[in-house]
Length: 133
Image 1: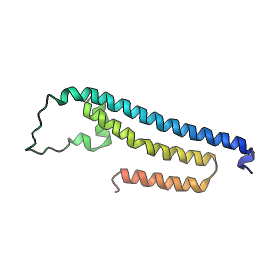
Image 2: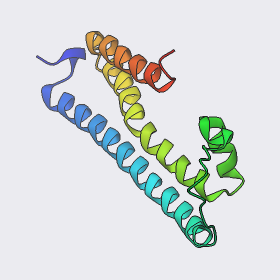
Image 3: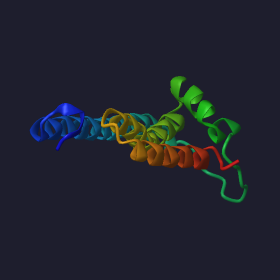
Image 4: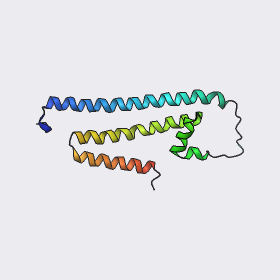
């Protein structure tokens, strides 16, 4: 018997709607990532051939590329490498969004065990992305 006083067919339709939403969210994030990275690459490629790297001297990444805020701030100024990095950050965000939306889907289904388990997974993802400390 289906929970919440609805038929099994209605429950299947609701579940299908949730899965379609999650699928469309993932597809949209990946498409947005591709668009952002291609845009950054189009800006970056012409300038990449005008620079001659000095391989005998090591130069680390600029400080702005060491934080999400720094990458986004540079990306909004039009920095091509930062735009590509922002696309990669969007790609990293995609599975995190999937887990976060799953929390709400399980809440809607009143499946509290999976809400707790999914919140633990989300917490672990966010903890690991924050540097683990």
